[in-house]
Length: 353
Image 1: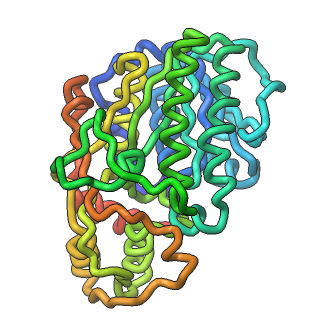
Image 2 (image 1 turned 90 degrees about the vertical axis):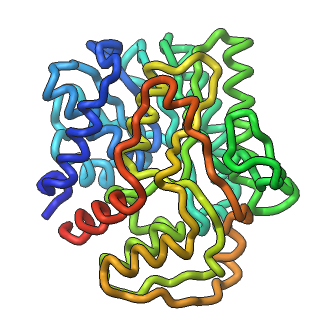
């Protein structure tokens, strides 16, 4: 079964496409999305194409990527649709050869987002978040974009200093910048500062959705985050491997809620503002998450010491819960708890070819 034939996945798309949002702002517009074949981006594209078909939105979706074969395999369902167009490009190079003179919205979602990438490709991690973002911001200026959304991360908050229970958007914890692992959070911080520079100097309209640890049936097999490894093991009928004591206390977001959050920020957010996409019903300790996933497939949790490459890529944060009140004030309503999201993910992944 391919993902588009899965009823639960179609339900996820329908639920997100049915969110109460000012969709009319996308009517007859165009959107350029970097990182569109990733976990978040691919679901976002599916939702937008659903709106095109369902509501005759006539919104042109430009999918930016380095691998056309990968993109065609993922988006075969509407590869030849008039409102879908793949653009072969590496965002670390300025985008000058583009099929249209103007683009209304630019969403920069491309990023290394898992531990092995942080440790094995630290340069690429940093450059995508800074140079890649600069190229997208420059493109937006040249092509008269109405708004840019830069997908930032919960990791910009660093270590919880013990003075707050949940991170609000104005919190700034501790990050040791002189480490390999600092490349991801520090480049996201720099990316946010770069957005503010373009707002001030270029009068560009930019908003910043801050994603927390996201998961769902669109996760990639190469994703080395703990949650992704847990889910892949569950689908394959294996025990869940925990490579720490599991006392890390984090916020998680099912992909449908992550995408509805991004769309809410894009369409309703205030210029220059950052918004946490998180809900406390999906806050959980890693050991409890492992137990839930193991229990759902009748397996057990086993402990294993990570190798040095894995360890170098792991977050050092022990408590990273995000406060989503600011986004909820815009009308965002998350749909799935951590248990519901995990159950749906395992069910959908287990049915795929």
